[in-house]
Length: 92
Image 1: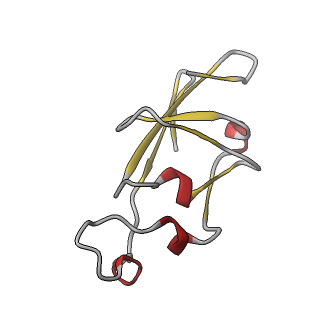
Image 2: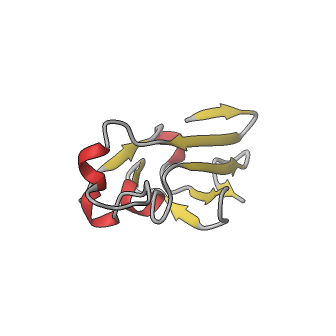
C-alpha cells in the first residue's frame, strides 16, 4: 500500500501462482483456490472501502486486511484505490 496526501493505492499481483492456475486457459486463479488468504494492510486502512480501478467493483477491508479471493475475483491482478478524510474515514 502506498499513500500520498490521503490517497491510498494497493496493487495486488499473485506470485508463484502456477500451481493455483490448474488447467485454465485464462490466467485467472479461481476464488476457491485462495481459501482464506488475506493481504495485511496498514492499521489506518481498517474498515476502508476500496475501488478496483479495472472494473469499479468495491472491496472492503476488515481487521486491517483484504480477502484475496474478493480482490482478485475474475482478475489476474488488481489496483485498488481509496481516499481518507481528515478524520480517517474512507471515501471514494
